[in-house]
Each structure stands twice: as structure tokens, then as C-alpha cells.
Length: 277
Image (cartoon, rainbow, N blue to C red; front, side, top):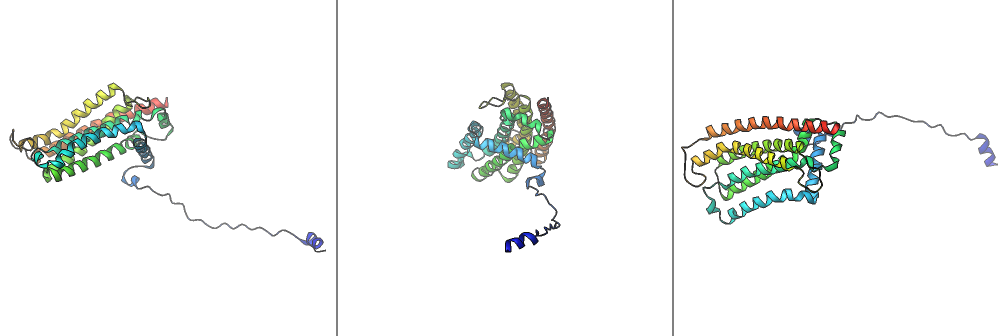
């Protein structure tokens, strides 16, 4: 009887849907874009960094500068008196900004391999690709330069003023070498897996242009040290003060940065256009 009554008089309960106002979605802003890097540029940099630390074929590009740095630092730690007055930190501060950013930026395109075609699928401009590709090499080079110069300042002091001027010149070289390396790497890439990632012609052009640029930027500071007897303890030329050598260094570094950026941008634009066609 109860079942018959339920079938006769039962009706489904009315369903009601209430829509409540939701809070406005606010996208999270990464930390790096606040320092002039966009999410796409950061993503490219992180991908390159993971490749650098995870792939066995990329390890050799980090091992070479590490071995050279250790070969300079270890003797200075055990016999610091033998390096007094010779400013070994200056030479190493010139070597690191020259080699590391040049080498890492030259291989940044070729190490993509066949995946380089993915670049043309991204809504990316030449400037964004440049910043994304150079972020890793610039960061590693700056950290290495600061660490080595600071370490030598403790074991074999150059003097505060010389150290600051050397760091300024080193940072300018890092910027210039990064632009030169990426400009070469985008023009002469070698996509073969496990190879050098840049052609022999590209290597020759990169090291010649990079070496000349580093020499031009550090030349005024070297002359300053020579004039004060800071290389071998004997002054071979009349004293040259920082009021002359440091502004000249900044002017040369800024000019070379401008021309190197133009060279790099044209190479990256050509790379993107070639991939799209």
C-alpha cells in the first residue's frame, strides 16, 4: 500500500542552482619578470639550465673553465706571498668573463638539436630570444667572476679600487661576449647531437672577435696596473690614474656592447626567419 501511495503522489524535488559571485582571478607574477624578464624568456633560460646540468654531453663545457679556475686558485691559497704584487685575480677576472659567456652562448642554439624548430612555433621576438638564451650564461659568468675576484682579494689583494674597476670591466666583457657568442651561434650552429654545437668557422670567428673585445676593454686597466707596478712589481710606464683608465674602459665597453648587440640581433632575426621558412 505504501508503495502504491508513493508511486501515485511522489514528485521529484525541485532542483535549484545558485551562482555566487566569484573573486577576480589575479595571475601570479613570477619574480624574474620584475627584473625585466618575461615568463617566456625565463622558461627558455630554465630549459637551457636544465640541459646544461643534466646532459652528459654538456658537462664538458662547464668542466674546462672550472679546471682552469682551480689551477689558478689552488697555488694562491697555499703560497699567497708568491702572488703579492702580481694581481693574478686581474688576469683571471679577464679570462672568466671572456671564456664562459662566449662558450655557453655560442652553443646555446646548436645544443637544441632538432628541437630548434620549436622556436618558430613560439610567439617570440628576437629580443625575447636573446634575453632567454643569454640569461644562463650571464648569470653563471657574473657569479664566477665575483667569486674569483673576491677570493683573490682575500688571498692576494689587488686593492679595493683596483678590484672595483676590474669588476666593472669584467661585467662589461660578460655582456659583450654573450652578444658575440649568441650572434655567432645563431649564424653557425651545428645541430649534431654530442658534437661541438657550433661550426669550426663559428668557433674561429667567435674566439677572435671575443678575444679582441676582451683585450680592448681590459687594456686600460692593464695599463693602470703596469704603471703602478702591479704586475711584476716594476712600473714600466708613467702612472695612469683611475680618473683616466676607468672612464676609457666604460666608454670602450659600452661601444662594443652596442655593436655586439646589433650583431647578435641580426643573427637571431635571421635564425627565426630561416626556421619559419
